[in-house]
Image 1 (cartoon, rainbow, N blue to C red):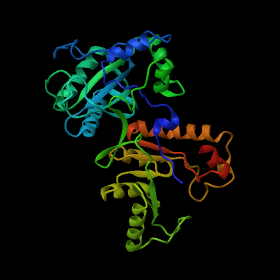
Image 2 (tube, one colour):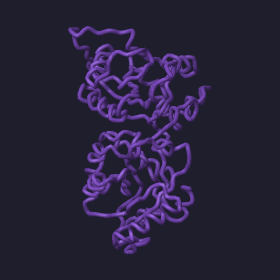
Image 3 (cartoon, one colour):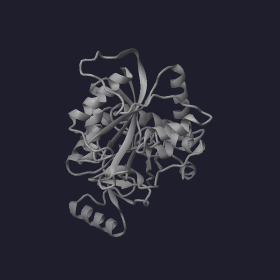
Length: 369
């Protein structure tokens, strides 16, 4: 049995506040709550930096939050190129939010937007950071357009840490067990997810999968002779294709082709180059030290499953010891997701799987469910 979750649904850690509406309205709510957050919000229309101005650098790295939006061309490609240029410009990304598709506001006769946000650290001062983001927009092809109109890329500074108190306040929000989305609701505000044309999505194939619409069914096709479920049954092309057609006719939305190799990285590369739309890694990157690095460049969703040991040791007594199975799975998956993010895989492309049946007893599987 396979259970997939968007990465923050299980871990509760993704940055889930959506900033498609004017930023100040959101900070107004935070600012008037009992937990006050002080931040610098810079609007592209209110600050100007001359080309000859001196570079504004801080001796220490400051925490920032930057929003991304796009509704022109290949929107995800625009995000990827923007993140790459940010990294090359001294903006070191540490966390990614989830990905949202939203209806346009004010000017409604235009394509839908995708939106997200990233946390980062930088030695750039606030004005220099703003200037850098404007240059990145220009380098990617953004031109002056009507306010609230279509844009190839939109980069906004949502948060810039001013002092240690600001950083402490920010960490108190981001450390909330339910993530900022739950905290946002605790402060008396309503979540916009699923409302007003806003949906959390994950890019799959050439489209965006909306998790909220319905549960997707995955059919498993094992093509190795040693599978403990159906090993050897579908080794020929004819039998494999026949089984896939059967599963599709029975309602499968996607097919997981089960394969194993001493070189799983090679499998991932070959699978994607031959048309695979998603990589399901049963080890969560633990059996291949290069997996995260490879996945960062493949532009397909990455499933990180929880498992201890490998296929030959996962059910031994040591790997079946848990004091609190859900808590320990969450902690171990969290560390894998963090490493995946730091390797360049955005959270909006990460799916987690608690690994029912892998390094678990029956009672563990039931507790996870």
